[in-house]
Image: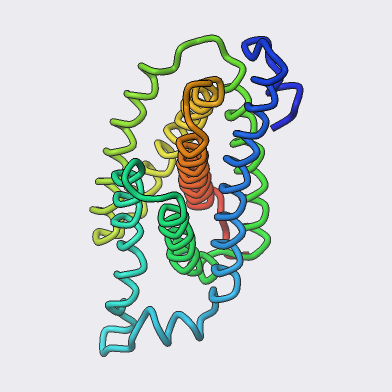
Length: 243
């Protein structure tokens, strides 16, 4: 985040401006850490040899997912729930361990995209995602409109998308997936703006302890990372190609 944006008038002292920069540096540091870990793992193991060795087995009906594949796909849900529900009870090192485990599992889950889409398509979609995410993050930070009500609506839509995605994981309907992806782009961009506004409030709160701010920065990095990955996947399903 650009210093000119962070040094906004609502941070009326130099100390508050410095605290805000430090807070957001941690938030984006955690987010980028997770993206790098997930991206490196996905690229390293996104090969047909790895997929057929660990994620699929040959049957008379063709390749079928293995138990390990389902573990990798669904276990991040449990890790995410544990991370978010235990944020106030666990120590920062344990929370960071869960955060790291989540990014590793997501990396393995994302490895399959290299079998479905070309490297150029993945790279260009990542760039589009980064640009869209950056614009919405800045909008959420600088807007004076309270996005709380919008955030509540978007979260309900997110739950609907999550349930629909689970159902379609087994139905494998291309038309349904296309609709989910369109809604996903809208919901995840909106939630990005909403969460940036919430993070701004945390950065401004001088009553929070250093430990609480570290945990909130980690939670913020986790949330933005999840939104970025889901926005990326939604755009990739819409615009990605094999060529």
